[in-house]
Length: 348
Image (cartoon, rainbow, N blue to C red; front, side):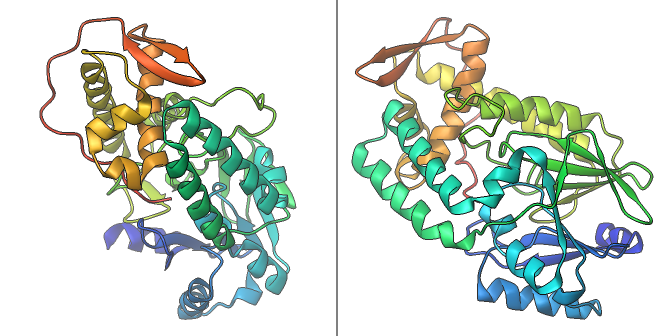
């Protein structure tokens, strides 16, 4: 592929490592520089480690040679092998400063994430048995993640300096609270993690806030993600290296498509509220049927995100009773969109 060949010419090699998730392989990136750098590591599994070692060997490298590990965000398919690689190699670990505590005490923090998600599910009408089942699934997957002792915390707007290149550190929350982009302005290459993926939209999941944000203030993930996409749109990137799938050579067009899709889905949600107030879970069921049960937290995050945008516009309001929130339309329903809503992608 021409884009990957250009990345390789710039000393960046894509290492697609398998995951157990529907999103498929995660793209780790080996940067041939000083220090020898690995961006993300894949999930904590023997299969992923074996493949990572094989892919490194194909470039004449070994795990023990890695000198710096860079983490793009807190999701377990990106952090699972970080400690394994760091222990074997002695590599430093660089990540956004706001996620340092989370990564250092991963098991506890992930458990708090689950507690938080259950509260969100109850508030938005997901039945208790479904919420309990989803928590069990999340706990079962937790072992694919792992703690990481960050030795080089990175501030938003700071620079990550290697011998032959310099990356600007850009905090772009939305898909997760810690999404971090690494921008090489001289080469016009952007390492984007899961902030922007070519073949699927990056899910803006409702996630427990990171410090210093107040713990009792629910993040508005989609609102943050829209703002982050708008900022990324302005970068003069010629090549975006994503955490999953193929490289992106026209990020502005892709971002414009994603923002347009957000507007269409927002109108769809408002239209469904025309008859009577509904919970976010009821809205998800109307939009995706059985998918709303099997992917309940994912679809809930999608709906709540669009409701946040509608509330910001004054188009809907919350009605709370018995700890459960319903949403009421305050403006007339728009014209129907072009077709049924497509289910959100089910990757991490």
